[in-house]
Length: 81
Image 1 (cartoon, rainbow, N blue to C red):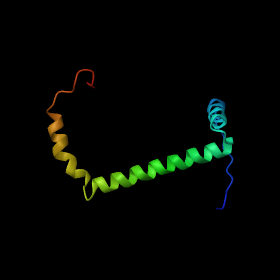
Image 2: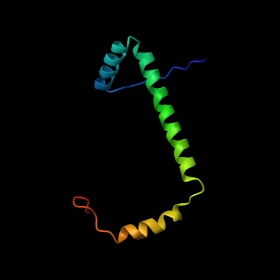
Image 3: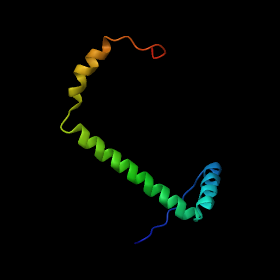
């Protein structure tokens, strides 16, 4: 596996929390951050793939009948503009 370095600047509070969690996991801060980034990439790519498959061949205009119906409904209490 090739590796690349990247100078990462974090707010002190985020770095402290990440360092604490890395220590609890028994890994280096670098390894903990690498795994966290890999997990985030997996989540984002999985969600994007799911949404693409779910949407299928739908087009934005396909939502218009639902939006037209929603216009006639009164918003629930607390959800007014």
